[in-house]
Length: 221
Image (cartoon, rainbow, N blue to C red; front, side, top):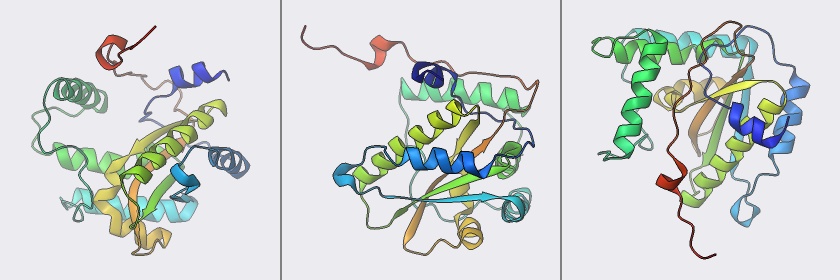
């Protein structure tokens, strides 16, 4: 697949089929993604690939917590700034409205947080979830490196005909994830990435992106 096509077709899929993902494909993707840039070549990411029985156990435990109204574990980093201002707030609100509509959850539903958490805990039906951790000694630069690594992973998954959905939600249940994957206290969970083949016939909503002029300035000739 052409790189531009991989970028154009990548999106956060929230409806996966149950077709298994071959391990050799995942190994090929993750080995190639190791070429992603990192400052000082630290390669700070630690990835756990979970499927089969362990993933079923994790989904069951996370889903039970969500349905019980568990607010989740103490956050180790904020998902968003305390106060979003335009244009970021506008983009967030528009994307959230589209996402709620797709998931069939009314914006005013008082049980909305629980329902959203429960759907996320299913990883939207994905048969594989990658969990990316960083060492606690790492700083903002290495978190940026992890982002570049994960973007590389998601583009390579598209080249293999697969889709993905990054899920910061898993940090809400980081203790449960850590128990299942065996991650030590010296690691911080960055996010999970659901991986699989898109469910046939599922809607394909796409969030809008800002115009180039809103985010890019050309200086010089």
